[in-house]
Structure formats: C-alpha cells, structure tokens
Image 1 (tube, helix red, strand yellow):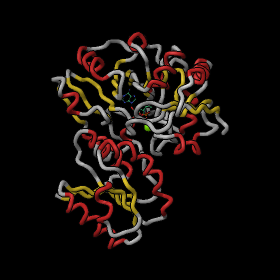
Image 2 (image 1 turned 135 degrees about the vertical axis):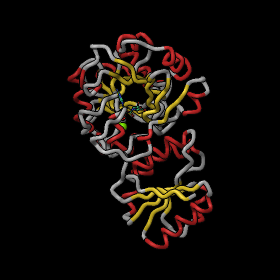
Image 3 (image 1 turned 90 degrees about the horizontal axis):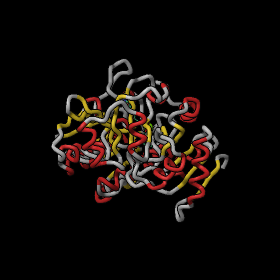
Length: 345
Ligand code: TXA
Ligand code: MG
C-alpha cells in the first residue's frame, strides 16, 4: 500500500479521521466513504489541491466537482442565494444523497466548477464523511473514486489497484450503503430538473408538492458538442471493455426469452440477472445482481468491474423498470452498455 491506509470497517477510529482531515488542511487528497460511493476529496477552497484530484482521476477539466459540506454555514459561504424550493429540499433530504446546483460565490475556485458560475453542493449522511469535513473545518470537493470512465468505487478492494499511490490517505469503511451516486438537481423557474437520477427519486421530490422535470439526456446519447445541463452527461462512463447489451421488458418472461435468444445466437456470453431469474438462463456464465432495486443499486458497479475477467463476446444485462431507484440504475446501465439497448413491449 503506497497511500496511507486506515481500516475503519469494524472500529471507527476518530484519530484516523483526524489524520485524514489534517491531510485535507495541508492541501492533500483523501479517499473517503460516503453513503453513495467513495469519493476523492480535497479542500474545495484551494485550487492547487483540487487540481490533484483531476490529475489522480485523469478527469476532464470541463467536468465540475461536487462540494461536500457538513453544515448550512458552509453552504452560505459558498453560494449566492438559497431559494425557497432549495430550502424545502434541504430540510427534507440533507444530510443525504442529493446534490443541489446553486449560483456560486467568488471564493469557489474555477477548477471546482469547471468555469461555470454554478456549484453542486451536497451534505453527505455518512458519519465518516461528515466527521472528516467537520474536523477539516473546510468544504471538501470530491468526485467519485475511480479513474475517469470506470465504474465508481463502492468498496476499496475494487479501486485500490487504480488509485493506490495516487491519493495521500485512504479511509476504508467497507461496502457503501447505496451504491449509485447522488441525485443531481437544479431548480429553474420553480421546477426541479433532474440532471442525474439517484436514490432520492422523482416521486420523493414530487411528494413535497414540487414539479419535477427529468432531463431527457439522462437516458439518451448526447454528443460531446451538445449543450447539456450537466457536463457529466456527455462523458463515456462505467463501460467495461467487453461489449455489453441491456435488455428490458415489463413482461419478465419476454425479457428472459430475448436474453436466451441472444445466448443461443452468440454462445460465448455472460448474463447479469436478478437472483430469481438466474436458473432460467441457458448458460453457465452468470452473475447475480440481487433481487431488490436496493440490492442491484449496491452491486452494480462491482459487477461491472468483474465482467472483463470472463473473456466473453457479449455481456447481457437485465434491465429494470425506469421508476424510483430503477431510473438511476437504468441511467448507469445504459451508459455501461454504451446505449446498446433492446426494449421489448
Ligand atoms: O454521490 C455522489 O455524488 C458522489 C459522492 C462522492 O459524493 N460524487 C460524484 O461526483 O458522483 P462525480 O464528480 O463523479 O459526479 C458529479 C456530477 C457530474 O456529472 C458533474 O457533471 C455534475 O455532478 N455537476 C457537478 N457540478 C455541476 C454543476 N455546477 N452544474 C451541473 N452539473 C454539475
Ligand atoms: Mg463519477
């Protein structure tokens, strides 16, 4: 292990979080858990420290970072104004997996926001993340922990190879809770626009009496020149090297039939399916996605990281209904499959 490492899986040693917080204060970068995925964090107010994150990830400089905070004082120090709808969302969902885009203040360095006049902010509910921010007493800019283009890290074992030595400190608390990144939203003319779906769902927001618009680019392919509301939408993301195909039908028998047809035609395939469907597939190469949407959300990035080891011609992935947490799962899967998608009515 080239990076400094602390194992907090069984016992959360506050002294280790303190050491990591000193790294943040000194302008170094720290790999830490959140409730969604692991992040690579730096002092959000120090341009040079933030540069180290872009370098470690190989991230495009036009893709802005989310700033993580632990109290509303920090929020007010970073953003121009907090509107009524944003206040409602904050009251209901913070701390938690919701990132809100605000107009930023001058103190937020240009590289954090990729030159935009807005900044994405979230208050994580993970106790270690929270403590790290509190002890550093600084807002922490952090993208997901992975080399750009790769699936986000949900446990250290998955990302250690690609990130060891590139970060100064690693806080390991085992498997994260949610497994897909936060919901990213922006309020425009009293409506919430979903820029990236996540654990906080359309329904969760509508339940507050707020109108929600799902940006169409969430499920569509967009060219790198297209104007998008969130730069992250236009990047290749999560895709394994092996070609992947996403298959979905509301009628699960039709979905299973279509997947078996593909298996028969292609032969050398790997199937990622729900636990209860696995024995219906005519192949020995299968990976279990779990049964509930919560299971699938937790497992999906680890599974996507495994598929290349199988040396198959095609990976076939079962889709889920684009509803609730299913919208977030399908958004990640459709990107992993590079829009190679069959939906049967
Ligand atoms: O759950 C999460 O959000 C994780 C954990 C570590 O907090 N972080 C994360 O960060 O997923 P990242 O950098 O992998 O994704 C941030 C997304 C990108 O799609 C980016 O384009 C978008 O948020 N974003 C950030 N700032 C934005 C802004 N000012 N306007 C529009 N989109 C923004
Ligand atoms: Mg990411």
